Image 1: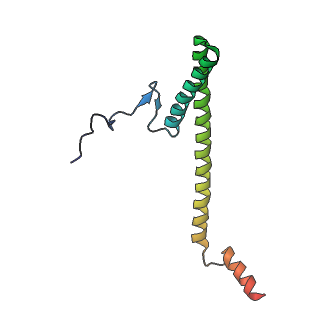
Image 2: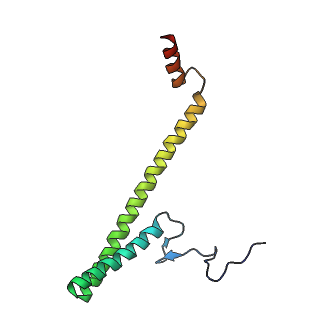
Length: 119
């Protein structure tokens, strides 16, 4: 029998959606991008406020920092995920070919050992 989720833990029933459209739990890189973006927003806005003491402009800089850092982290993470998937696919195909051609006349390792032993 499954235990009921505790009040502090999020349940499996409803996923958390940011602004009603971005499912933070299921979209890769969304959580980290939003967290780093909010940190970038605070740093940019507070830093601008400490330098200039202009409240409205500091809020604008904070929003701009959020957008820039969120998009930067998003694209960086998605690029790394795509690169990793390509590398995994290449490795998977290499393993499949190794298993398929092992100890046949098409095996490249066998040709190297045959030419070495005949010399």
